[in-house]
Amino acid sequence: MIKELAKNFVYDSILEDYNADISFWQTVAGVPSVSTDYVRLNAAEIVSEAYLSSGFDLEFDLIIPVAPTAGDARNFGLYSHALGNRGRICFNTTGAVFKAMVYDNNGTALTLSNSGIIPWNAAWTAAVARYKIVHNGTDIAFFVNEAEVARYSGATPNIPLRLWIENDNADNLDMAAIISRNTQGFV
Image: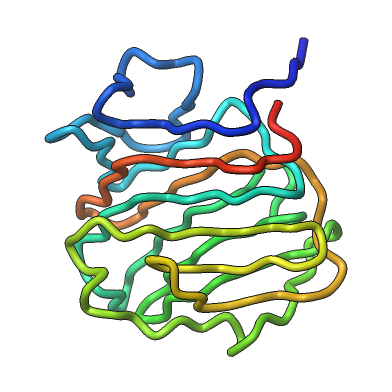
């Protein structure tokens, strides 16, 4: 049975025990661990058990260990493995390119400001940075440390999707927290 949960929440990796909290996260690949109060993904991927739908202010407080470079592969945002790219909304690193990505309900990539490409700021390397996705129903904006870095305006996807963090690299991507504010649908 699906039930509506809180529309605002904080997943605090200091207070939550990832290894014991099987009710919120599901491991997709690798072996996520807990290290110094962070959920650590080293060649690992996790998704939430719950789904978010359109209308949210979602913040990922992450430590990305190195600037994007050749061979890198990281994603975090909203996604469903069963649906492929349908409705996918995320930050993505492929090689040396860091970008924001939005796909419509059919899985077609949508055009974002600056083609979604986000110049990497050295201050984001090996320090907690706040990566935020705000979906207000008519557009989707991406922020890093409160500075807008990309935006999509137009018909927005509205498929319920899971929270998603994927680090295909053999290095340590650490999650400090996830904050959801003003979420219209969370089940």
